Each structure stands twice: as C-alpha cells, then as structure tokens.
Image 1: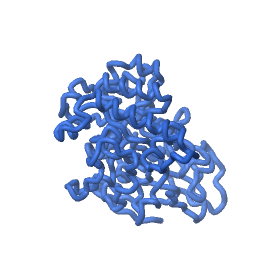
Image 2: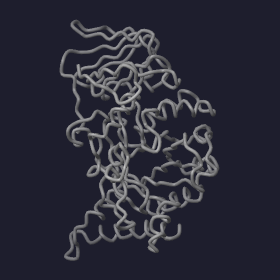
Image 3: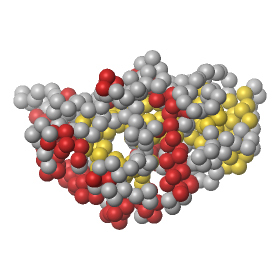
Image 4: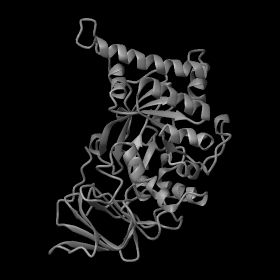
Length: 401
C-alpha cells in the first residue's frame, strides 16, 4: 500500500488560502501534519513547540488532485507498441485481467502528474473489450514496485459500449459486431457469475479468476466502470446495472447533457472527459464543453478526467478551469477533481479533502488552481515533501525532504 510517511517532526502549512473541500475556503488557514496524516485544519491554530512551519502566505492550498480515469503505466510513455498493455484482445470478455499486472511504475508520466498537482489516479484497462478487466487506484509518486504505490486494489470492473468493441471484434468477424452483442456479452457474464455463486460449496464448483472478479461487482465490492459516449449507450449501461442491482460509474458520459434529467432521476455517477479533444469519431459528434455545467445544474455527481494518455493528466486543473469557462462554478470544478472523485471511488476516508485523518496529500499553488497561469510550487504526498524542478515544463525532478 502507498506509504510515504514523514516520520520526522510535525509540520504546519500556514498563511495561505486553504480549500479544505468541506465548506468555505479558509483565508490565512493552517494545516498541521504528523506522520503522513493531517491532524488539524483551521485558522489561528496553536503551533506546537518544535513544529516546522511552511509559510504559504499569498499562496493557495488544496488537496492533491484526483484523476478518476487514466491509463497511466499501462500505456507508458513513450507510447509505442511495446508499452501498450491496456487491451487484451484475445477475446471480448476478460474480467480476470488486472490493470495492476500491466502498470509500469517507471512510467515518466507519473512525474508529470505530480508536477500538475495530481497525487491520486485510477488506472483502467482499455475499452476494446465488452469486459476488459479490473481497475486500481494508485498514488503518483513513482516507487520501485507498483504495490508501493497502491491505494485501492479492486476499484472497478471495466466494461465498454459503443464503437470500440464493435470495431475491434467486427473486423475479426467475431462478436460483438453490434451494440446488441456487446450488451448480451455483459449480461451473460453477470448471469454466469450469479450461477457461479450458487455452485460455491458444491461438488460442481470450479474456481475461476474471471468469475471471482465479477462476483465483487455483484457483492457491491466494486462498481462497473462503463465506457459510454452516446446517450443510448449510457442508458444501456444503466439498464444493465439496474437489472443486476450493481453499482456503476459512467466513464466519459459524452452525451450526458442530452439526458441530464434521466441521469439525475437515476442518481447516476459520471467521470466526464476528456474534454479537450476533437470530435474524432462519430460517437463524439454531440460532444459539448457544457456537459459538466449541465450535469451540475441537475445535481448529478461527476468527476472530471483526463483519460491519460488521450490528453496529459498533468493538466487536470486546466481541464477543470475549462469547465468553469463553460458555466461550471469554480468550487464545483475544484470539487470534481478532489472530493467528488474520492467519494465516487470509495477512498474519501483517505484523500480528496483537507481534514483530520486524511492522508497529507497537499498542493501549494502560486494562484487560484484553476487559472491557467497558476503553478504548483510545493507538494506533499503522504506527508513527504517534494520539490518541483525549475519550470514545471516537463518531467518533474523530485527531492525528498
């Protein structure tokens, strides 16, 4: 599990504008950190004797940003065939695949993420298969082993609707050739998992890694993570989730603005993005930069995502700022890359807010974090301080203190 504890003396970050993500920002706020955890947040806090103090006067302080949908490490940079491990296209149903086994912890893009203030990422298999495999959540400080970066092992089961499975397997004249077949394969697998559960403890039972993964979905131990752009694909995903009484997060949700009332009625959760791309395929033709604002106005919970390496997740704060340009409030935009994705992924007890008991993942910005000119000036992950390289223009150079 990810552990970067600063086991030295207590640290106080004081004097800056602090976005706790739990109410109104604190002017001249203070955060106390000990052994990698936040122990107090407020204004005019008493500073213990011997406490190291970081002066954040004139700066803005936020939780580390969270990118709720990436392919970091499974499509490592440089992105060429030898680093492409996101899609196991030997078959369209591969729930046993685990992104953890494909992640290259040496991917330099982890450094870029940190340089952009992103401290936590969800990493998913690609979207070639109807069922692609299991997702994980990592901290973004590169370690010798991926296990040392791990925050949550079973974070979701990737499924995909729309053009991608049809294109990959239609070219092979193998199901799914149509959207009907994609939905069928997903339903069939969920039903097989139900039958598999009934056989447990009987002589007919044979262990199966894939079915064990799907059982975690049926038991509400992890959600379906559904790649869906078009409104009809979004609705198919929600329909299947309702039929099998499972949790689901809608990844991309490109046409969500067209069915916002329906998404609100169903209390849907969405991971929206990437926004800063062209309409490169037919299912993106009704893409709108106003989708986050529309969903927010209808009370739909969502996170903003990069889908790295589709667009670099180093600029997650910029994508949130773009949503503000098209009608989303600044606080809602910041929440969509901090508290909301943490709650969506079941890790809000650890990250996403500046509150006692949370990991000390903290970013100090030169200005308001969603303004394009603002830069990350200092960052702590698990209480461990990291100094940025001179210009934030490429891979970060880190020195642990």
